[in-house]
Image (cartoon, rainbow, N blue to C red; front, side, top):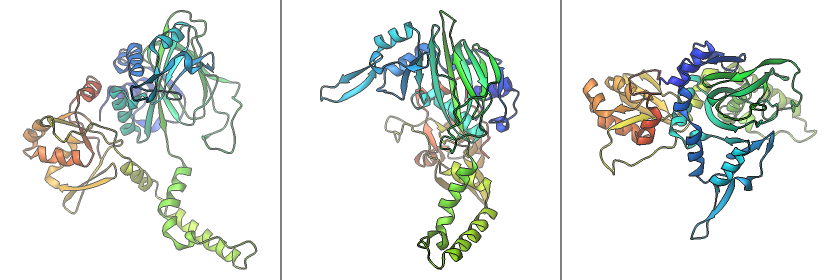
Length: 407
């Protein structure tokens, strides 16, 4: 999948692929700053949150490092059947923002198709899960206090400007569940500066940072934080325990009672079995297993009830694995494994490219029953019907074109 956000981030940071993700702090600028407003505008953000039932922590307001009481910007709507739904109160939120505050919306990719597709493009690129949180700051308000994240982040300034301070880690590779609470930031500042529309930051896991519009007076800032949660050795060991250790009787046995005579012998058996597990450890196998079992994104399913399905788009969270085996084409993704005729490979690669694809054009280009093939991919949840929202989310960002990076 080709996407302007991914190529823009690579160019801005001087990267050639995702290998630098999680490495060193980096800052740069998109060649086309207007990309930010194509992804999201303040008005579109406010319209989005107004039309959904949301409550903290999905939506929050922060002023000078402290959360604003939710009753100032949320209300409850009671339906005629007595159901109570929390909703953003437009007038209340307007007053909070007019006074200076930061509106935080977590996981906006779940509701906005443009950001959903941007996150999927980053996932296909980095082979890690991605979520985007959005921050709209008004006037001279500051946001959260100096803190660190347990995942790598790519920050894109979409509109306005905001001042940032970044410091290095005080504990290498800290985790959400850890033995050290990691509460003391280092004194040395790695970078300090103001982001303007189109600027990009890469802040690796564990780096302390804060952002503010203090002393900026009038104006606003809108930025998106794309969080990518990379896998660790802890994840690999957990997978080994779940997928391999449970298959061996020695690991399933009860540990000997206290002071039992065979305690040392059982411990030795466990050490030997564990050593054998670790010696056979395959990181690539773990990555393939994880990516292939990840379910597809939520999508509209109509089964053609409202007319023929003309366009489809791949909606797997990671690139499908497409290989040839025993003269057949194998497709693995989203917990599904398909066996298809080998001659269908060019058409399959186009249908699973991550771009909106016309079924008729695939049929014409490859002289194949593309309707039948597309419906197989639809039924298995690897593709979705291209709705108006998905088409709009791809427009100018992930245009319809053949781009095979699905291997």
